[in-house]
Length: 114
Length: 116
Image 1 (cartoon, rainbow over the protein chains, first blue to last red):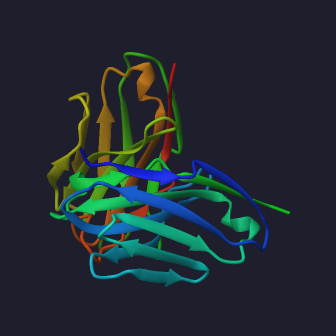
Image 2: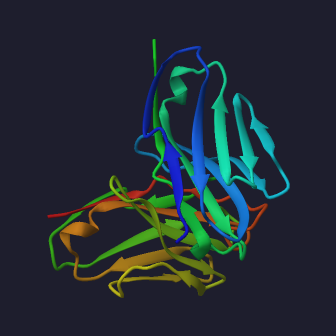
């Protein structure tokens, strides 16, 4: 069964600190992996999309890594800001690239405090 | 450029009623996907429409249905509402069929449905 597991479930960090969120998946065959940020009460916003051949992609202070061999991805946030407080969702797309093959993680809830 | 819009934003219904939610995609986008989000289950795929045709359907009962119009606007309908249908319903639009390697999905703000 295709699954995406994220850890930790929740995280509290001080403003200015770095953090890393983890995503392990068992989706096969693999097409791409996406990270989304979802603010409370709003829809998810795409941060990065990585295909099989990419092992790192950055979007400002967000850097995603992908190890397709071990089926692991991480999202690293540098110099966190209060506005980074949100849920971060890892989504893996199967090889056909259709919506029905999208498998969602349940997210990591990040809280950045002063 | 306007983003994805969903109406209504909030809705309260009682068990047994039916509900219709609307989604207007970003101009030019032909793919609209619908998702249900609950605290316990996270995001779950409902269905996807592309050029007025349903391309894919998730594992939801037949009470959940949808359609897409020629202007790419989409509606989803839930009949005979149950308490467990209380959730945030999100739609997302993209140029091509969602899930493609280079295609970003843009989500709307969602419709919060509460079934009493």
